Image 1: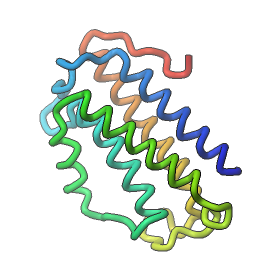
Image 2 (image 1 turned 180 degrees about the vertical axis):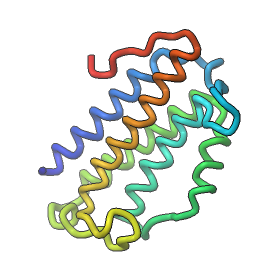
Image 3 (image 1 turned 90 degrees about the vertical axis):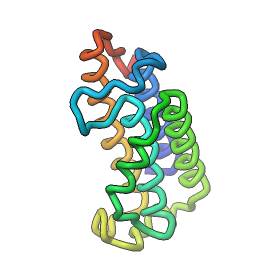
Image 4 (image 1 turned 180 degrees about the horizontal axis):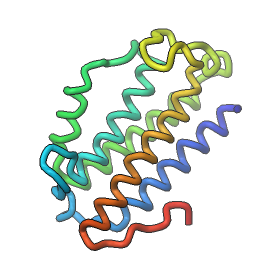
Length: 155
């Protein structure tokens, strides 16, 4: 898959996620269905943080395996506006990295095979899409619990 297709996947995923977020309002940011779970804002911040994690893991110095720190970073974000800005900036960074990569770089194995077993760097795009879809689904459930109707993300 050439880089334009990877960029398209990232852009589509960002758009689908934004559609899901469109039903939430600022006061919804703190909603947590059950103690210990991510809030609405935390879900969104976690998506942004994980996009960065995948890109740095595949194209940067390697995988940060301190998952508790990642959860803490996401849970520290309490504003939906801040979480959305974080997530959008992460998509922008991922798109910039993929846009700047050569085909050889995209096809090269991930240097540290702790995660994804040495798959080609380009494979993190599928992982980002899948992970983001997972949290988009969780947010649709959160929306229902708040009495909102989630939007069809693909419209």
